[in-house]
Image (tube, rainbow, N blue to C red; front, top):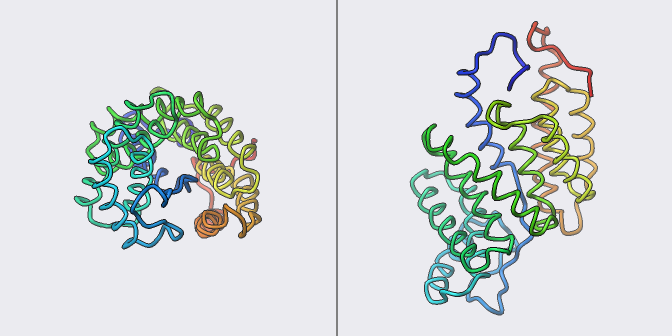
Length: 273
């Protein structure tokens, strides 16, 4: 990221930003969409970490989508299921095949209802996960899909999935070098907007803590981590808040390790807001 390390060349930045950009996607998002069991012969997903249930649901979605060519909701819900399944699998080939299926369903959803946010949301998110496992040039060519699709989501329905599009945009601007469109100012603005929209969520605070930490603003990062720990573990955000607490604890440990090490000339703690 420009300005963080003295002497870092533009080519080094180019080679490193793609993994950072798309790695944040795995950390991102607990979606609010739910399968409507009265319409679909698929299991509901109260436990989104149940891989077997997610795989069973995916098979059911494949059948239903194929037999309902005009059903927008089926395609969005199927893409939702793909997201939760992929982030728990290890086999790269299997993950890529599932992601291509989810991306295709997302595109179909967009074609059916271009002014609805769901198709755009999953097209951007699943594309990001796919290029994470692809070569550099594929990732570079596809990097703007996330930004473009999240901007469409914000335009169509800024509250969709509890403002997750703002988190995605904030992380995009934070990860991309300035000469390719990145902006610390935009990143911070989007993440603060996400916090405003979800005061009971730990996720936007965690994203902002990551932003501060990568800019060596460790005290500011720790304040955001404290907000993650303070997020309630009951209510509709309980599932994601529990997961985010674990991520926040890992980040806090990394920060403490950094603070306990002698500062180098390019790795000094920043005290600016």
